[in-house]
Image (cartoon, rainbow, N blue to C red; front, side):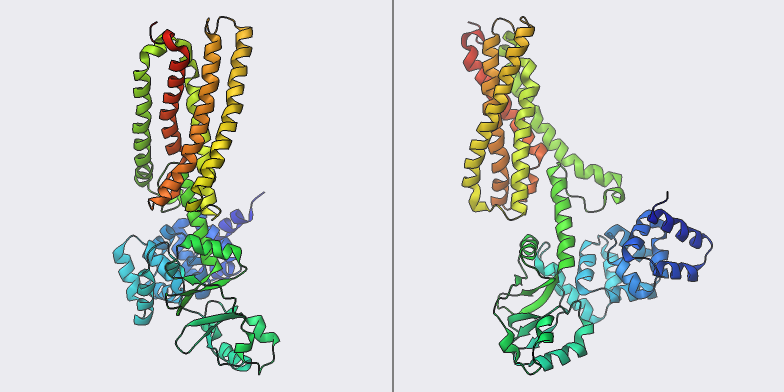
Length: 464
């Protein structure tokens, strides 16, 4: 049975092949915006034709939710007239995002030339804010009234001007200097007497963002408050714009994807996986792989240092993979938990000591659990295969058990503390990816394992 998107694709292709533009427009205008975006994903070669065929309002709404590579393809194929209509119809925040992400400067110049001087200056101002700050996400189109208005005057103002703004769910109250005093939901205006002064409806419970706040802060504040939009102010509390929930959700999804890619041991992908040229994909992955490879080479150096001791108690080599994987797994677990907690705002930089103590206890407990399992495994296998571990099987068992306790605890501490160190240095904690943590713990874990073996076996491993 065909899915709805397959049916949509089949019908659209048949109309495109028949060159029936009028019928195609009628058909596409009956579809949901999200379905048309899915259709473009299925037949990207016809993206420009689909956008060109849609009525202008729907074309703008579809264009704004496309990924940047697809937007770029559409821009290069659209007529100047249609492109001008779309670009001038985009809200300022969407225009800023588009201009900021387009890699081709000549394309940016071409689009900027289609804007009015006022709109061009507006986008230029928004682009002046650092990337990954609230200022880059805000739109200067907001509904604001003076504190001296009555409810009647406020509603009349909204009727005259509301259609020019992205959202009118909330109205912002300013003083004569443009300083933000409070905000009111529209419902408060609708349910109160028309002659009520706006000042009587204010409750002082204003929630706002600063233009230079990091986007992570904005995501957290939206999450904790039931708002569709929040005002953005400068250092003097002058209202600069608003940030809407849809932009925050897009940014949250983007940051989540970037963090997952970094945790997986690769640079963040700037484009969807299938749209990224293969040479760029290799470049994104090669850097980390080279770093991790060089790091893993240190394990060979450690084993070379203990080569003579390993040759004398060769059975210890059987447990090297176990040690490496156990330490890497515990470190990766701790790292992932702390990175996620930081991203959610549950853990701050000042909490490092509390986290250290918790991971010390949990790492020790987990190490004791795995160490006990390792000890049990050797005892059971020795009872079944008495010659498997040799005459020193008891020493081997306790070497493995004690090493697992130390390695798992060490891995937990390294994995949990590395994100704090990176945050302290101003780097993204997600850079402490699972493979990176595992590489560090691999090397140090081997030192712990072979060091414990040297202590337990004593004269046997030193030729005595």
